[in-house]
Image: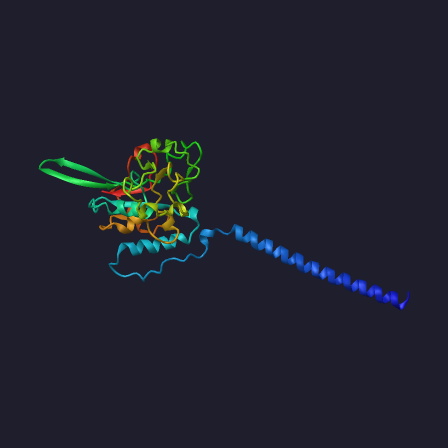
Length: 293
């Protein structure tokens, strides 16, 4: 073989080796990208580091809201299916001020006729020995909710953390769920505005709500107009480390909220008391709203 042929053969071999090196580098990088993507898909976004409110260290006789916020932040570090949100309402402390009702309306931009947390007034005794009892009634977030299976389009379901959620865009407004709920905890949005029959629609009527982590603006007959609506424990607040609006606005600190799966939480402590009850337990709906009496 001539020197020229040897040189050409060496050059081809060197080129082949260089191509193999580049190919190995390319496919190794591609595999790394795919592996990283798979890991990213497998990772629960709920477990990613959250930008939670900074809280002061525990102090003696501090506001109970601070304890509940710490417990909320602790719960958010767990996968969503390991949480069990519950609400406890102390009827001995409720004074019937309706601050929770108004806070809920303001937080969720509720229109006329839609109330997520009414306060029921009950008169006890006979004159002259008469007293009043006030019963806040949010959605019970039942473990076995009658409202879910009756929906013909599967627009409502139970989340892994126990909150009953709705898809306004899927809801067809048949109102089967409203009829099925034994607690009257669902209402229909008929498209009314607080400033109806006035010269100009008020700004607060046009403000969007952020229920279920989405931006909802009531206009043009679009969702949530025409839909069934309900309390959702302010999940859009929970997921950023904030307590429900009804809990933070209670002037008597009669409403407690937290993760019942955390044995050290305040709510887990309260629901173990002998003076705890739930509404219509005989129906087997297993509500996650407890009352202290």
